[in-house]
Image (cartoon, rainbow, N blue to C red; front, side, top):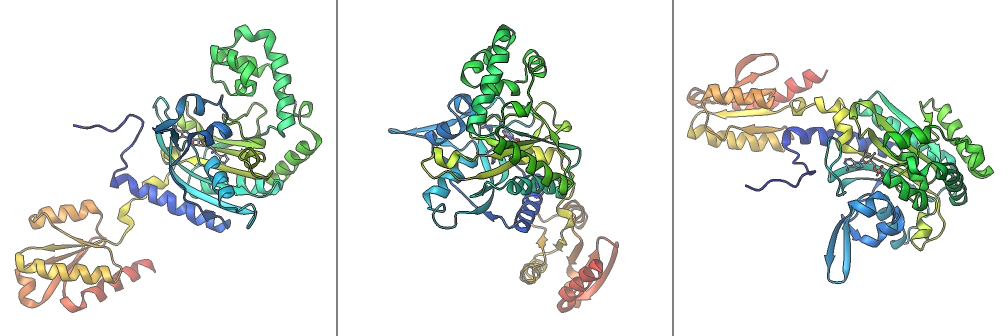
Length: 421
Ligand code: HAM
């Protein structure tokens, strides 16, 4: 028997309702903030990610799902930001609309070692605002992330923010770090020994206890590396967040695993997630369009990992039983014809309806209706056929009565609307 690839998931119907719920809430909130949906291919040229995420980033080094086709090297997208900027430039949005607010939902692929909250195919729910360097965009995006979490009934999370500064600031910061770390390089882990030369900022993000301890001892005052413009930008972001009463923590050690970030970066963590504790993350990437051959253009975004949201969300407790399902039980062949017509009529009135196709006994079919969370059961047996009626059972009130066949839909609608009052 075939088995799924480790790190992938089958989302069965009992779970897919929670997914839809999360997606629907997400779409509603994004639309409130005037974001539009963008849907892009799952496969891109691999070099798009080398160029933007950074050749020394973990994703490019170790986690790309590559597909070779002749001379071409494609990659299953490991994230959504670089493809969105690619699409923005390719479709000339930099010359037409210029400023755009986009959201997206969909699968991403990273060849990681699977564990709780870490998959090889996972899903992002994210957004990107392209075309502005205004710090209030940063504020909108962080507050949008916060609002999404509230609407997903998630609490107990922490929003950590930091500023990496502009390209020159990042270089200055890297130099400061290199100077402080080099004398103690022998105490760093093997990966960080390489990072000191190639990507020293990533050492701040290393999870190894020895490296963490050394990083904690560093002197990381913003003033020492942020230029006046970037300091002012960060000041305005914090001011805006305070204005909206968003809880956040300035975390000077916060860096991101992707090279394209500049200025504001943020990460939202949740203690219930264990070692993979990031629910989502994002930041500014004001040089990314330029990296891809476009103009210098301000941009910022974030992405939540949907699997991780579902691990901590209470939305998942809401299940399909909130639907007004009408379950029809025909007890003989002639009744089945009536049931078929009845289902058709109910569905045309947009009432969710289904029937017993397994030819169960009345007792078995009632148990099934219960399991499905049906709100109404319609029984059609010999007696009902003779009298031209059906038996309507209200599963919520536990009451049952016979109603004329032609009055059934009206009766059900009345009961549903009474329940809504
Ligand atoms: P990222 O931090 O790589 O950022 O991913 C965002 C979120 O995706 C993570 O915080 C986590 O919740 C989830 N995630 C990442 N990898 C996995 C995995 N292997 N299994 C399950 N969940 C995972 C980005 O991808 C950026 N594109 C975010 C962004 C948008 N920055 C600006 N705009």
